[in-house]
Length: 123
Image (cartoon, rainbow, N blue to C red; front, side, top):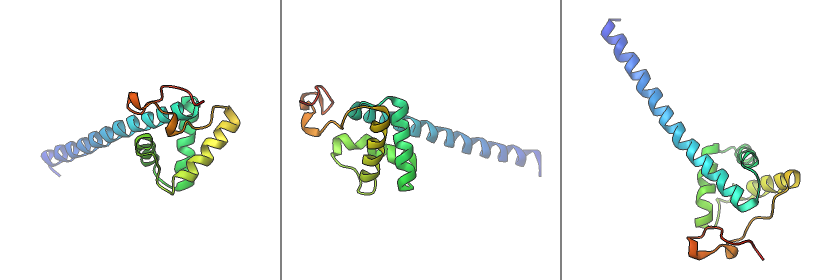
């Protein structure tokens, strides 16, 4: 193999690594957003939200980043895919039993004036 071929191979490896790192950054951001959704809706702490996401991923045999994408879309969509919904309910129930927290805030308690964000506690 010539020096030029070795350099070309190294460049290709580095480009692949860069692409993987970029994907990891995007996935990390989505996971962080999903944790934020779980914290806002359930009252759990961020590390507990992370554990909930992991548990749902394991129960459904779905990549964690895919679970996170569904959770991030959940407040706006108002629903989750049928294979994720029961696993998330179980994981949240278990986490609240261990760590406390509150029941999920229902859509009717969201303040529509703030784009559907949580602005008041349920009555």
